[in-house]
Length: 244
Image 1: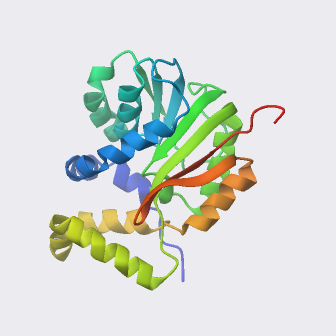
Image 2: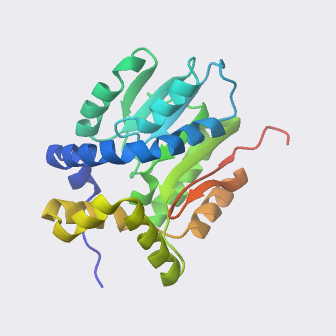
């Protein structure tokens, strides 16, 4: 079977697609707020610590806002490649003026990171974006993140995974439909844009196991699944402390 064209850029750089995503995300975010706060709690900082973190594939900044709320002296660097996402994000991030900045960065492309991203970071997070990357790029991205972390720095990823067994997949779908009947009903009348967004969403989702192996091969320690709800989870690890 031949490869089909990657649709990430077409989806996320489209004003129409981003507006549709933003409307849906606003509804879903109510149920994700606790997950975002837990992601923030996983960072090894005290409430009043000063630190800078990188939010890769930040979109409109939902993960960054949760961290900035919990740690009032923290500073965020939000990296994204979609001008449309940044436009919406600037609106959503207004109350954190002076504590964040956006950097243009295409995380789907390997190679050197922009100079606007510090060479050494105290923490890196990703949220609902790594699953859009092919496996080889997931692996290389984790290695790049490791290289940019200070010794003792943590990386956490909040993302969906694919089930290993059809029965598990069916169970996840059944529970999701009961928890969110509105989305289940909408699936029966999807627009072409809805279908394109869904196809793009699931295209590169893989099981958990290989992703934890990608972290291990990059050199991370303390690797674990720190939170899980059906297909959505938070996993991560730490760059070892020098001399440990």
